[in-house]
Image: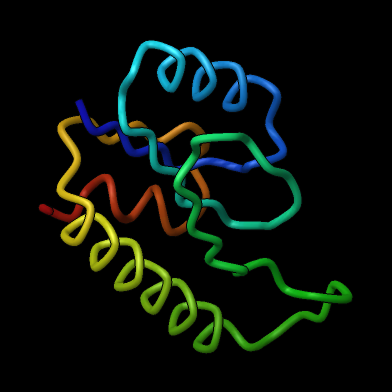
Length: 102
C-alpha cells in the first residue's frame, strides 16, 4: 500500500509511524515543510516553505506562497497516487488542502 504523510520530518511521531509502515513493507512517502532528517526507505519531498529569518511579508505574498505550496502538494499527490494521505499537522497549506478536492 502507498501511504503519503504530510508532516514535519523532524517529528518523532511521524518518524515512528513511517518506520513502522516501512518495516511492514508499505511504500511510505513524506511531504515535509522543512528539511533535516533521514529515515531509511522513506521517499521524501521537502517543500522548504518556512520563511527564513522571521521576515514578515505582506499578506498577499503569504497567500500567494500558500497557494503555490498547495499546488506543489497536489502535484506530488497526483504523481505518487497514494492509497492513504495522512495530514499530521495543520499548517496553512494543509488546512486549505484538506478542503480542496484532490
